[in-house]
Image (cartoon, rainbow, N blue to C red; front, side, top):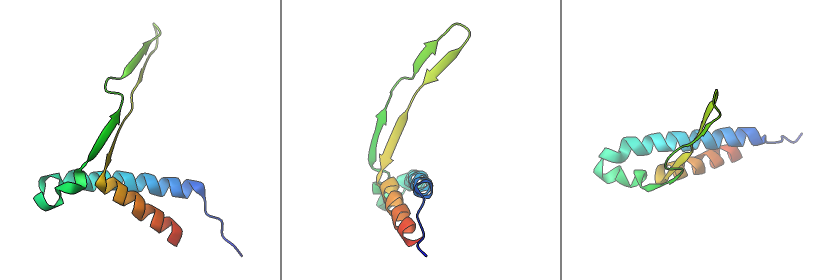
Length: 84
């Protein structure tokens, strides 16, 4: 019997890898020999876009910071998914 791997499991593992990697990168920022884990680039909207419709105000904004630790977290998530 062949198991099929679910796309949503991969997406959840990748999201967890990015979040945990970013968290570890921010923790390692103050340690001199681990500061390379927080090296990365942030991109997205600098100022949020505001849509004012009178009675309803909607604010759009997105900013993503990709660091070395989050890339390592994604690689570990993919390896974990292949292992499952």
